[in-house]
Image (cartoon, rainbow, N blue to C red; front, top):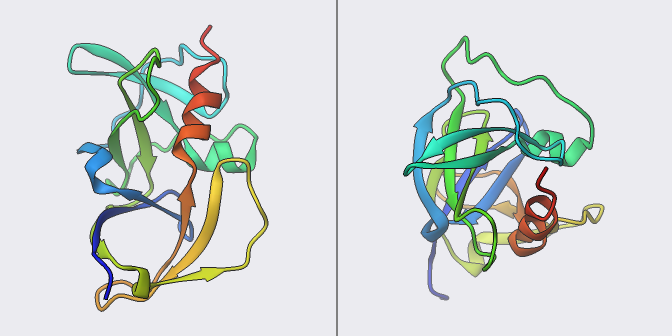
Length: 157
């Protein structure tokens, strides 16, 4: 049996999830409408103040669909903000936020609990997997965070 990787499953649409290492997650906050955007890429839908710094807010749904999607109003209180540490050195931001469409889940994932699923390639996705855990049977995308951060954060106004 391989070593377990502590991970966070982030729902970003009712059916789509992103799986990231939990070591990159700073915190999870209740959703609040972000400040106006200060960035060129349309997937960076706003900003918020975190640790006395203005950080970008990323809509994965908007990044995936490559078109403008209205921000949630959080009328049901289900949305969250996931604060991530940037893995890209020399980035203009040490952190960024991802809009989650529901409550993220902390999971321990092993190689045996993941099965690769055939899917169309995306410029920011390594692949899609099916998680087969006792407490979670979901599909999730594995992001190429370095490529994603490089593209998104190189386009400052």
